[in-house]
Amino acid sequence: MVHFAIRCRLILVVLLVHWAPMAQAAIWDIVYPRPMDDQDTRDRYPLEILELALKHTGVKYQMSQSSTRMEQGRATASLLANREINVYWSMTDSKRESQLLPIRIPLYKGLIGLRLFLARSANPVNTSMVKDIAGMRNFTLVQGKDWPDTKILQANGFEVVSANFYQGLFAILQQEQADLFPRSVVEIWTEQQHDNAEFTTVVQPNLALYYPTAVYFFVNKNNVVLANLLQIGLEKAISSGDFEKLFLSVHQPLIESADLANRLVFKLDNPILPDKTPLGRPELWYHLDNLIE
Image (tube, rainbow, N blue to C red; front, side):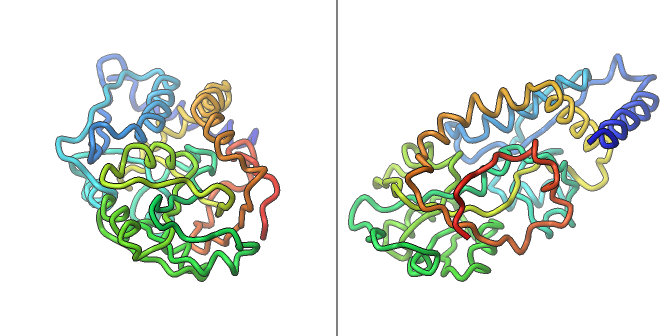
């Protein structure tokens, strides 16, 4: 950890030398994807983390949305082409890290891999007999076509139905083409309340899945300077305690609502987890007890 901090300081010195002639006048223009729905609040936390990191660098900056709305697939393509946006956040996998440049600080401290289930209010499936992971595999799950989660669930033996568009996933659930919709503990209550106006869902009360994964900020592979800037800002926010303070203020109520002590939480393998995932830095992860392997 000490060596890593020293390396970050050295990078910062090098960056400051290169920026010195323009440091006072330059303003970093940070452009991120416009959500599909202006009422979508799920982007609020990563944007707060992004701003926190930028503040810790001391640079001048301005943040703005892209002019067009972007699903995850379009955001990836835009960043890959280095147009419209210059940063976005997404769950990582090996393919994404080969295409883009990740800043390997898990924004949700791994909670994005803690999955509860949305179920139909009308004619829900009976999950009361589930005692082990084999019992969980009796249910068909629904996920987005381009989501890394789809590959993870399939690799763990689940049947997964997918769709290209987010709202279509709720329709699949409603039409009984799938039984359950796994959603992260950091998203599920917002989605359950706001994202499916045509019908109602419930949060299944006593089951969950967990797989190790992370949501990172990503930039274009040629934008090394911006990547280093965000890395340094995030490391400083972690060292100061500001990152942890913001994380807990947003997510502790959600963790408590999940009532994990009264759930069976099955741990899955993540075969697409990149080798450079910083699993050896425990301060970057939220520790979960009583996982069933």
